[in-house]
Image 1 (spheres, rainbow, N blue to C red):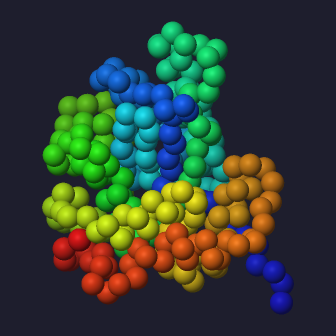
Image 2 (cartoon, rainbow, N blue to C red):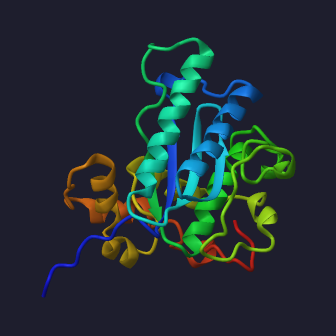
Length: 248
């Protein structure tokens, strides 16, 4: 039986994130946030990319992206990160003083089902979790912002699944500690979020590593890591994400 080629990154949703180097505060003022938003808007004009949700925090940011073609993710994120780093250094008067970010970017593949809803909620709820806003829509620097009509925010694309009609209610509801820790574990390991069969069969993780680093990666130990990283997301029937019910 011929070996199946690894899946590419096109058509797969990714939770993409990056953090400042040396705990730099990247966004100390409204102007700092606005510069990053401007770079996001410019990047969207240069590269084909579907942006589902985003959230900018004082020293890091989260994007949920849905690239159409293989290679789109790397091109989009490389230009976004490098351009913002250059402008941040120039505006802060610190050009030549080292890296702005810990690395180019990190990306976690997400299955386009209830797992995507969990991840989008995690991203847009960041300011509430950090104590920066009482409600998710109060944070201006997020796709959940109530001020979308009045700000120069990057355009959002339709999701590959239906967004619940009571999305804001779900965003601001109580958060499950077990689900939160499962997502954080996947972030630490950069491991896919989805059903075990999906994680094992897509080959997305290897394809992303090849696209991002230019070399193949080993499967060694990956299966155990995936289970550890995401097995708790929806493991208990009482803690499942139900689009027509409460999220807790």
